[in-house]
Length: 167
Image 1 (cartoon, rainbow, N blue to C red):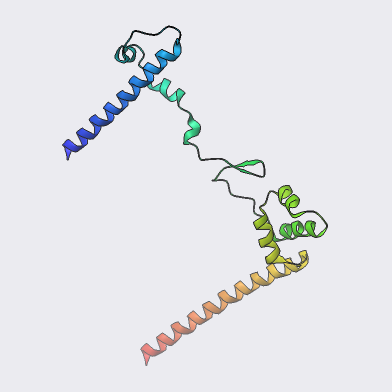
Image 2 (image 1 turned 60 degrees about the vertical axis):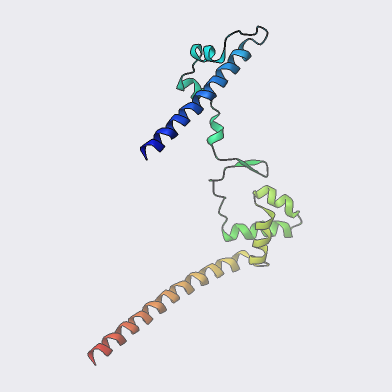
């Protein structure tokens, strides 16, 4: 096992040195292309070994960053979550199209996709803002009633189990 690790490390060092030789030779040619150098790559590497700080400063750090996506002309990184619109905001955006604006113009203005717009349209349709508020209240009340029902059913089952054990 140790020999495999040693062979791997030796290969890795050889690879790094090969890249360093090539980089140094390229730097020597680029620094003065009109005057050809008589130095071998080994001589060049011995005189121009870059330090780790120089290598790090030459490295393009953008290579390691996540890609940037353009959405309607605005940069949006992959880790950035989109804006969360309230139900009222969604309905207001839908009403702008009903007012005569083009769908694409409204989508660009609010920085949303056309797919999101049509999904909202299917979901909220011709609903008004006050109807949406009432719907949200009813959904909240419905969820509370479901929790109460689940708790009461659980209590009933526990009581039935206790009664069976006593009998």
